[in-house]
Image (cartoon, rainbow over all chains, first blue to last red):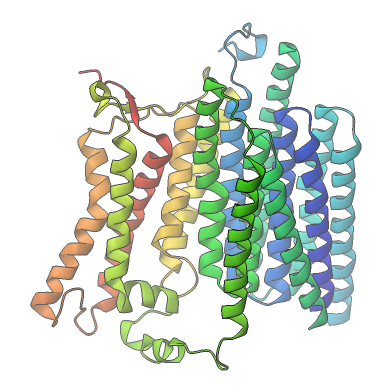
Length: 95
Length: 97
Length: 313
């Protein structure tokens, strides 16, 4: 079981590595933020799998912390990506 | 009983891994930001969810199981919100070009 | 275990590849995202090395706070839009040679360590029961090397003062120029109303659990800082001016209380930062609680940056 979980963690890690290609290529900044989100989720999955594979429950706390911080960083990145001085007001933004 | 749970873990975690692969493939191959976002949300939702559900028989104690489920729910919730924000930012970027 | 070794090798290879990619990336946000991924992978490496406390801190600081600091710097640089000329080849080769030398030195140190490596771990674990703590890292931080921890917290405050000193003269004591969302964004407001309570609970849990399992004041404080910054970014609260009394109070209460406990050691025990027997754990918990608050506010203000607008009187 532990070896299978290690294999699964390695597989997700490879997926994370592939997602990085989008970070390099992604034509716009929003694409890069998108892949950052995927990589964050992948990291959480790897940590959870490792926590169970090595029976170290404290690693679940690392996954918890990573989820919160990844959300915060995504919001901060998006604040910069949606900066624009000349955007017209939209229907959805009416209070 | 133990064997059945182990098989369940194998199946669920493999399914979750497959969804990760699908999501990554979508991220790399889809033509547009919004379509890539669609692929991403599948990973956040089902990919992580299946892995979490698959790991539940393997953790010791209800507290650890609760923590793992909390991680998934938090990831899902914030993933949903961040996807909305990403979509808005993508639409703004499109309109600017 | 073979599979574990393969996983570790793959992780190490990926880390090196991403480090190379980060240096080669041209676009600003791309490089910062790669840096964040680097932090995440380092957290996984620390987990594989059984250093979960360091993994927690790496995930929080390397993956979160540092990325935000870099982002702020990159955005300010974008406004100046200067294109530096590429570095000359000899300079690049010299830098590469020096880096290779440092790496070779580190590898040599690791390979030629005496076997078994000298360590104080058994002694630390043997005396841990007297402090009442269950986490050896907390024991080292607050009992064996408490003076180092105190000085680190003071250094953190000094770093904040250093950041503040970048302000213009007339803006001193004013509001930090943290860039928040320009218009109210209902989705973000929803997130900023729902996530911080959960985040604050997680932060308090991390600090509380640090006594007996990986965690501690620093990790808890970082989560609190991230939640506070989220609320500020969504404009649910105004960024506070740095001369406000409550800001200053929260900043210093942690280190001041820690120093007070230290001087208390002169009276009731035998030395600075010595704990009277039986009272070690309550004193440490009180010190950690106030430190968590102070670290949260300090890190939040570090990210917010130097004050830019004068405080409206």
